[in-house]
Image (cartoon, rainbow, N blue to C red):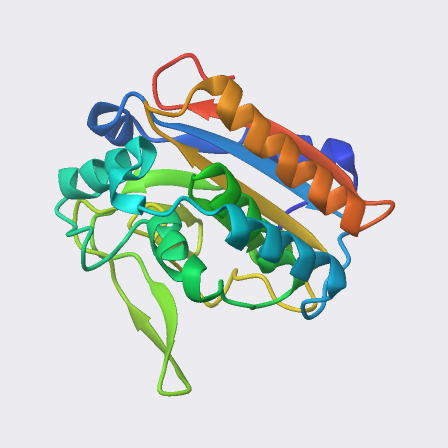
Length: 241
């Protein structure tokens, strides 16, 4: 469990997050904006999260493949052997679903999915109370456990060697950079402490990334009065902020 009992605890946890040099070599233009929050109001989707999703659907970019940031993510996936038309970056998958309606998952997931679509960048959310140690972005060796659910049963699979993954001390938390999250740390209707990861590549400026982070933070705090949130920008290229 992450020590996130106060804002200082959140900052300490963020301070230990890292990007491995092997990822830096692959995409030196990569940046991750991490937003850690506590005191969140969890639960199923409600009027607040629904309004954000509808706004995102109405303004969604119509042709994901032609968007420079989505195209950059396709390129990044190919760089470690993934086929982006089969395993799409998360923002690409969401944008393609927007015309027919974005998924309704739970309150917190719906909030970050709305920000992902509105700002055209991958965003993920993880339950901090289910984390084991700090978040690390690495290239997998292929032995790391990754928990999934298949046919209603929990199973363990493993990433391919060289695949870019987010992980903690217990295993992989998200495969193929931002493609699929594990069962163990996923957000639930009981999550009150979470970390959100906003992924950016070259076509997205630092200002645009900061704007997406501000939108997410504002939505989280507006939807959870009394919540606290802190953030940290990680760069693939040193120094890290």
